[in-house]
Length: 240
Image (tube, rainbow, N blue to C red):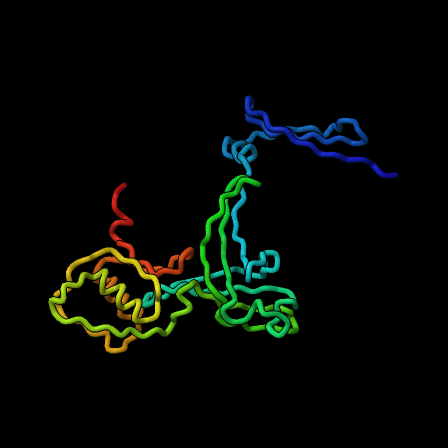
């Protein structure tokens, strides 16, 4: 014959106890007992629930539920481009079955945190699929992606300036960016450059990083606009 067993607990803030009640067939069992708990445990039990995580959008579709494994992205020291990888499970993502995992498919990563149904979302990365590797047997696809700077990975710079040309660091930064095919670039004015400059066809990011290091800037591609931005590294750490 089946026996109905229920277990309930209650937390007493006044007495700082955690009570567990066993009920068998609707009647309290003799196994009633109580545990003393610390304030930390009590606070944890009474704490307001908070949700946190990320959402992945591939070509406008939320594919978070198909993720398998972590989502990672990094930035190399010599480039402001963030690059990363993620793996999706499902035969519908195999490259020969869909265009969603092809090169330059839009990809967004959003982060959220807050109480359930009241989470605050923030765009963490906006970019494109660069390459993908598939495992048809496992029906998984590993996608390599980059932020919007991924459109300019091997851009060359073409810029020259005569000595005492009257250009500031910010103007030079924008000119080099435009010469590399980056349509939007923004930087502080910076110091006046008095020496001659010639990029000599070098990689644009190598030149721009050298300029940023000299000016005390750090570089990033804006996720909303796609613009290359130089921001004063020192101001980020100045007392508020």
